[in-house]
Length: 245
Length: 284
Image (cartoon, rainbow over all chains, first blue to last red; front, side, top):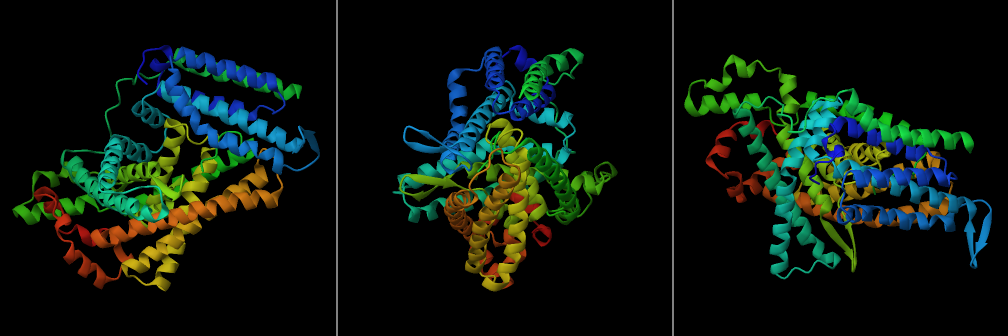
């Protein structure tokens, strides 16, 4: 998402590291420390506000967590150990805790990733990985992937429209063949595009580096402190919770 | 399929992260050594000398002094990047499984068959990591486990299994498709098995193993069958339109027959044709 908040201006490598640390703090929190989860949630909501993340955007991304919440809701029924009667249902105590644990942590984890991606463009993200010394081959391939992803998705969707306008009705298993043939065609086209691109890039002197994006100032001490401060808060909460429980 | 935060305990997440980092860096090194992509220097110098008779400016010392091992994977990045984009886009493509429900492709078996194990792992790695960081699909702390489950294990197992099955099913387009279908189904079940082991050893909750396994493998058998059908159809299409992309998976006679029949798509433009001269020999 475009924006000009403090979070947007931060160098991407600081944000990546901070997000990983924050997610680590969330996962390490003992599951019975409700207050600690509340603290994490308040922190993340504050970050969402600070990054001006629109609710419409956040809602779409949060839906990714839905299947896991459904899966977690099955745990009380298949959990082991002593059971408890709730509204006539026999629920496992261990399963209840497990379900709560997974639901809370996966939701907070998704919000963490959401804050990162909503305030960082994919290009800056890859530059950030580059600065964090991820092997250059990986970041290069990722660069090309993101550049051409829209194009490949566009081809898929055009072919989908073409199929549907020729009487394809993608609701039944026996019609999956047409979808798969489409995918095969797109694969061949994508591969050929890759070959052409490779020759073109090399003939223009490509030596395996891209110019960095516009947001590429190297981080100073202030950037690191600013980026790592939320993670520091989250870890303090987690450590206190670990000591108390 | 992607594990979110909170499913696995901290030690398991960390351990899987370390194993995944080791496996991916090994795959990167292998991909650079193997040179599965057409070597750009060869094709350039050959095609320029062939077409114009004299050595062009591109093969001046400045160009060819680039270290070969440095060129191999980084100059191949466009092709690898587009393959990763294809896997990513194909994962967004929903296959109808039954009325109302749908599954999507994982693509590990597909990449293993088409571009080999090491580059396949590299492409799947990028897809899985970017899904976690850009689309919040899969937890940031579970990236290691997701890499093991979706990139490393299925791609490696698919490679081995496909090479074995290919002998049984034969190297006709149908035989290769059948082998790919079985490979893809098994690869999904193996990914589910890996998750089962991780969750049993280091999950955040202890479960009744039997019923957990039953529901997990039941769902993934369906997903795997869908993956198998999709992979087979994709491989079948490629075997008919660009058999050279499947390399030695197809027998030579059906390669010749099919490539004669579908010659037009190979000559897409004059420029592309110029560089194609010697390349198909070295290409997988």
